Amino acid sequence: MPVITHAPTLILLVASVVAPRTLSAADWRLLGAAMSAEIAPRARTAVVTVRYRLVADGEAAEIRLRGLEFFGTELDDISASVHGNRAPFRFERKAAPAVAGTISIPPGCRGEDELEITLRYTVRQAIGLEGRRFDAVLPLLVPEAEPPAAREGFFTSETRMPAEYTVTESFPTVPRTTAVEGETKRVSLTLQVMPAMVRWRGTSGPPPLLTFGRSLSLGVAGVILILVLMGYGRLRRAGSP
Image (cartoon, rainbow, N blue to C red; front, side, top):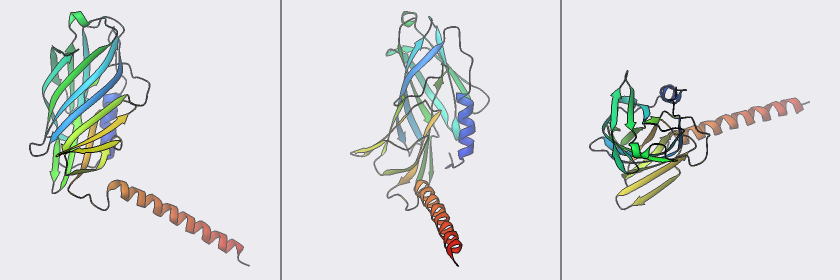
């Protein structure tokens, strides 16, 4: 997977996942989701676990999910469980890069007030390497559920990576916490909605002096400085006899 930088492409692809959808007779509501992942740079893979909290307005027999295999990634070895018990899962690839899946809800769990559904899968070609730079792309399967009202902490994510890795950019938001435990670094973030993917970019070893964020900040500061100088110059000219 190449190291990628095209933000407009990301916006278009994410929009196709979160666009309005048709709900089943027993409409689902997503209460929250938590992702944990571990990336293996040498194998260029990542193992992802996502826990969803869902409520159905009726006795739904299944829940559908969909997503995108971003930038050449491939979802594999997918398993599902409901309340910790393994559940049947059907996976299908649509027109690339779209994918979809269906989890069958065990009869004994249908009609419950709240379900905890867990997906575990491997992301092939999740890690792009270019010299010291890395680019980790972790696609997510999003339930076909009523869009929730945005709220703090609705989605949480923790990714484990080698301790020598330094994150310099991320999508869709900046990391909230970073902690090192031995040879492992844990990078976490929270969002008010569920994204279609989580992405980390950075370097192994010391970070570069000019990261994207720093370049952007310097650019904004430069524009502000120019505007201030232009304004000052006009004031001086206006005050000259």
